[in-house]
Image (cartoon, one colour):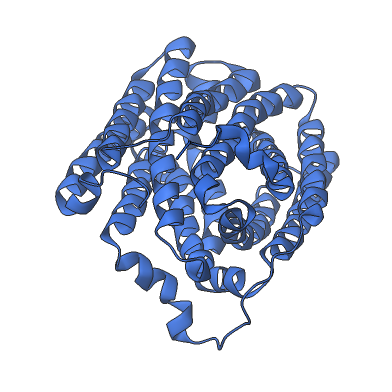
Length: 404
């Protein structure tokens, strides 16, 4: 059978709309993250305060995991995304209003981030579960790669653009993010609704089904948990405002540049994988990516040069993309459609734990032992986790092809 070209997924109008919305969403989130990070550290000069930013964003996903996944499996996933991004737009306008008013308080920022986290807690599983409904099964692998490409492209442009806009004031950065969220609402609204199975009875059995499904699949559980603990310990990006201001003296522009570099590496790997999907030894490649991620984290932690720091962050992002691609493909291919929302919700909690909770872990550890030691210890921890998971999850280590 002749292989389909990588661009065949764009024959689907709805997938194109979804990808555009996904790109703008990521762009807005990254611009907003840079502005919040610089603003919070400028107000507090406390790395723990940066960690609390991640914690506020993560807690809703953890608290609502059972509900959000079930919602994505029971109701129109497109409609869920529209509602969630309307709420997200509201939080962005709240941050803009705070910037206009010149508030010097940090607590209202955390409150808005909690609301933002609630909307993302519902949007993430609905968005992940919607992708397989937009393209034919044989194009799902390419769709996942293009989805990652769009996200990483925005993650390159977003921080750099956010840092640049912040030079003109926090109001400009937050305003640009709000405009992008508005466009997301419109694009998701243009996607055609997909029929969902009739809602079944809600019970603890159905609510816990996603967790039980993942736990019963050692390969999926191993991939998700490996990514969780590797990135959780190696969450150096939370401390970038400290490096930009106090260690490298790079300013908000340098902060935006450093935030972009992991995405540059990830984008190049995502584009490569979109053209040349992994055909063999997929599990081993994931472990190799995690090891490289840990080494790059250690290198970044020890660096005192902006150029070397950017190189380490580039390698870190490229290595992480390998893990993201393999995990995403395993979850989508090995999960039946009726379960995708609940499984995606659990997956979103793991992703949030690795990113936002990882930011809190990094901020708390930096407050306790110092910024540089915290990053280096995190990188070493990532290497230890990779070694343990190779031993504990042989099914993942010896997984050959990603797809059946």
